[in-house]
Length: 606
View 1: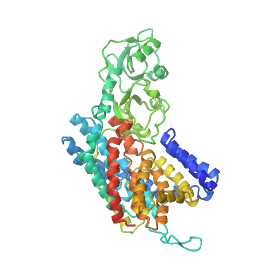
View 2: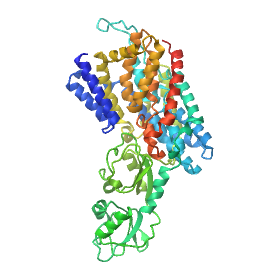
View 3: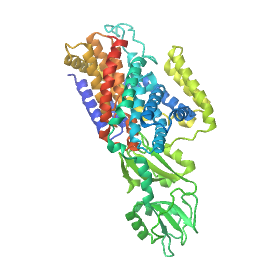
View 4: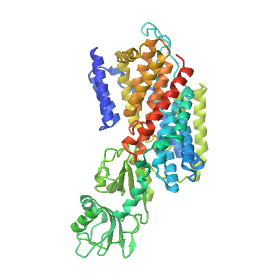
């Protein structure tokens, strides 16, 4: 084995290991690997950053901006609230919600589709007095399945389409001797035949059988409701006596003492009247009452340190005084607060936002919560000024778990946003405009019509995904040019020797799907796509069925909460544990493979 192959394979093993470990962000791991590959000279310096200008990278960024526009316009909210009836039976609710989710994911980013439908689903669960664990996993799986249907539904489809554009029509052609023609990239609806069958079959399974396989340990609890109700047991009132060290200080001057004792000051009562907001700038006087949130031990410590006294055993009636509001948010992969604490981000000091509680895999945290390192999938309970709470929740990267209130202006923009998006898709589908050009034009119009404000253009793009893709594409290209992908392809073909292309296709799909369950699906696709092309070359068959198999398999990660961002997002609100996913996910993956293989062979024959 040549030295460059040994280096690249070793580097990929380290990358995969670190991605599975999850200690470091996947974009940092991928970019670090690219830098190492450049230093070791296995990736040419002139091609170091080709991945950031790759067509797949550009399309994914544009799709994310368009998804933000559809979200801002209220178009998706209107569909969700009109179609999802909170009074339906659980069976009917799961069926209709799954169909809506899959349909929306076909035309927009599936993470965005879940983020918009999840609050509607949570409200329906609350109205019906049932645990959201019954419905959130079916909702997540349905959005993943819906992404299979079109080119823009999921990043693996976009990557696979671009890779097809690099395949030579004549494998025997030598690019060094002349111009070699390449295949056209897959179009907008080239994925639809296989994707629709897989999505419809998968949604049918989820609706009829799948949701019943969710463990009862998850469905018997409501993690979000429990988090909200538990907070009431941690609120107390303490009076400022005449000899207290607090007198003459501002409320915010007590932040250091509050942090030391792990308590939060949420309000101040004077002469029987609670001052507006958190009264951060109010000076503390004799007989003032501080409303604090903490556990009993922390309250005792704080009272002793500042020479305060208890008002009585009664609890304060409400956290949300005048101008204050509570909000629950779920933390997605790549959020700015992921891997950091509320104290590290100085939420209280800079923005007046208190972190009151955290729910993680059904477990609730209230002690030392502001020093707790936040993980993807956590549900945070925030308290702060009504006018800024939503903005700060977005700043930390959280997704609200409550339906938005649609304004009249938003409703008017909904039809315009849908029309602009549909126009871009039509222009690309009829080959009037190249897809990236059509999507870029739609993004410009979204900005001109203020559907997506300029300040949201860059925040709507998931930069970790862009960095991951931009970093992995050169590494994948180097593996291909070094003969590494050909080596893997040859081993897979030899493993299935004598069984025909269908067995090789099935084996490739199983391996890709397994990798996607534990790795990021974008990274999996970048590595698996050139292997699929090399397998087709060795078998002297069309690369199309193998590329389609990779596209379907890389997207369908149902076994773990780390295989797909949507599975991570529902973990906190649903109170799921790591081992809860495979019970519905494993049979669903088997079903997807069983229906996809014959459809791929029929629509994209060898």
